[in-house]
Amino acid sequence: MAISLYDVSIGTYTQILDAVSGFLDKGRTHCETNGIDLNDVVETHIHPDMMPFRFQLVSVAHHSLGALKGVQEGLFTPPSPAPDLDYAGLQNLVSEARAGIQAFTSETVNAFEGKEVLFKIGDRTMTFTGEDFLMSFSLPNFYFHATTAYDILRMKGVPIGKRDFMGRPRLKT
Image (cartoon, rainbow, N blue to C red):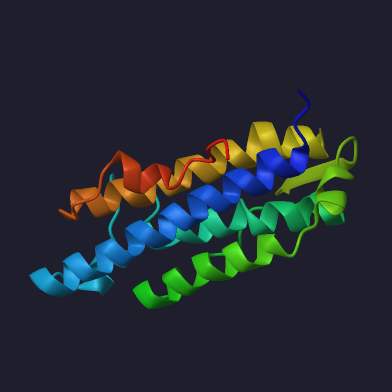
């Protein structure tokens, strides 16, 4: 059975962005119910040398919708400095990424196969094919940042579990 780049990328991004939206909702409810300052959550780091919760969610959007746009344009760069978004703004950013990826058709995404994509960071450039960029760079980064955001919420006592992270699996219909 052949699987398309569209199915692998858009399907995965959709599943996890939906899950991130869900655990952000649970995080908001938990914090509001328990008097936890949402601004404190936005600034929380797991470790001093790691970026805060805000950056994790900016990166989730950047490595999903931003990655698809980067492949389309042939150039991907790190995200701009994380804007000073509050918790609601971060929830909106994730929703916008989810809506944005839905605009990509299977024809558009499948045409990324073999397309050259440059990842530029400072003076350094790495060259990928579209499929290798999405599968070996963007998706691992996407999962890393989604996991880190999830972990920060767990650290704050939000009652979420593995199912909240995984979202709805794509079952045979």
